[in-house]
Length: 54
Image (cartoon, rainbow, N blue to C red; front, side):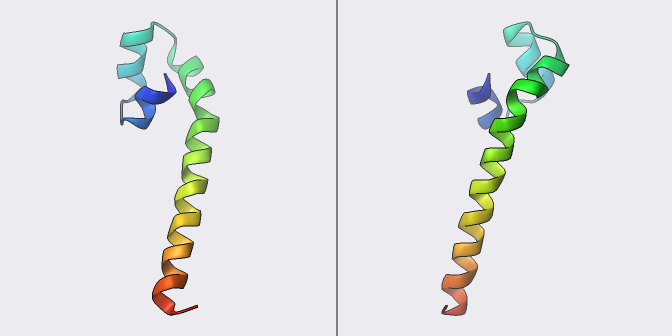
């Protein structure tokens, strides 16, 4: 389920494939989404620092 989310599938598309309710899919994917956003923020900050010569 998390892999489907990482590949860009919507909650409804995941629901069709795994048969869980949208609320449960959101619950299970919430932490994976949060982790991905955190990693993206760290990468973006490093890139900004690199471009600023820090």
